[in-house]
Image (tube, rainbow, N blue to C red; front, top):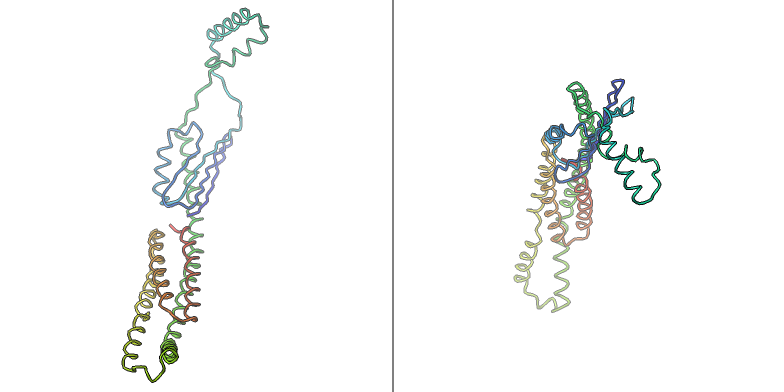
Length: 287
C-alpha cells in the first residue's frame, strides 16, 4: 500500500506541484494540504482519490509558486484608518504615553488594508487537474512496481512451505516404527515384556497413532497454499483475502507441529512458521 507520485507544471508565471504519498492502513485515510484558493475543489479531489485509491494512509499536497510574490493591495480604507489613528492618539494622550509611530500601528489593524481575493479560474484548475492526474499515474505505477516485487517474494515463500510439506511426507512414515519401538521399550521396562498383552498393546497403539495422523492437515495445507497462489493471479485487490488465507495456512501448520511427535518434522514446521510470518509482514503492503 505504500506509494509515491509527484508531478509539476510550470506555466512561466506559476509553477504547480502535486505530490501523493501513502503508507499502510486497513482503510483509506485521506489527508489534503491545499492552498486556500483550492478549497472549493477539496471535495472533488477527495472523490477522485477515493475512486482510484482503495486503501492506505494517503497524503495529497498541492503547492503553488508564483514568479511574482508581491502582494497586490486593492486599496486602503482611509475612513477606518483615520478612525483607528484617532482612537490610538486619544488612548496615548489619556495614558501619558509617547505617541510613537501610530500610523504604522493603525495600518496593521484589521480591515485597513484590503487585498484582492484570489479566485481559481477554469484554465488554472485544468492545469492543476492535469498535474494531479499525472501525479496519480506515477503513484499507481509505483504501487504496481512494488506489487510485482511483493508477488515474487510471496510466491517464493509459499514454495518453501510446500517444499517443507513434501519433506514432511518423506519423514512421516518413519514415525510409526519409532513410536512403536519407544512404547514397547517403555512397557517392557515398566511391567516386564512377559506381562504385556500384545493384542491390547496393538489396539492402543493403533488408537494412539490415529491421533497423531496428519493426513488431513497435509491435504488442507496444500489446498490453502494452492488457493493463495491462485488468488495472487487475480487483478482485483485481494490483500485482505490473502490475509485470511494465510491465517488458515497458519492453523494447519500449528496443528502439524502439535501432532508431529518427531524432531525432524518439528524442524520443518518451524521453517514453515518462519516463512509464514514473513508472508504476513509482506501482506501489510498488499491491497
